[in-house]
Image (cartoon, rainbow, N blue to C red):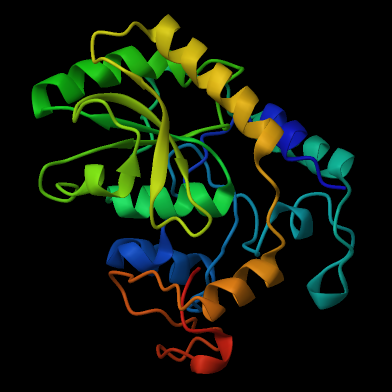
Length: 268
């Protein structure tokens, strides 16, 4: 069994960047670069700190890259211990510079995207609804919070903007105000959600961290892990469709065109 918790704990020396493939042309171009011209839902690799040198080959996930035995389609996926050992070896030549709390915070292209991803990953989402001035203040408060060992890698974070997210409150039940720090639990398909906690913009980092951990403890007790095939089938049955900025379609043969409908209509 692959332990996400252990993998997160072992990843603290890495900066994890998630590209939302179908939401940004630059992201699409980078995915194609990593996959030698191909385009797929998922690509995993590790880059050097400057983002220029590719330290591992690209694949669908870490299990087939780190600690794997052999090469090509016949390669055996590495065990968790193999993966952790490979990660330690990769990070050794790159000592940490600066402080973890100075790292760039996560932010999605839009709230609708953040809600959809939070649902897919089955994580709580911290959404910051604030004016541009208060948003910058919130980032200073949140940087040390999201560098905390108990929080890093366990929550998603999004900063709302008036341009892209004007209707966010219409999708979320249980809100008391249209500003503040909202801890949100997305619904099954990431179309709507509910606020399980809301703090004012004057809240301290300590208060936010405490609220996140408390909400996550309750969330972990009630959230049932999704079975991918069943989830996709149910989404299609209910005609659930997430409208992407870039038309959906994987290009696994690398000819520059989507491969066709056989790979699915969209991302549930």
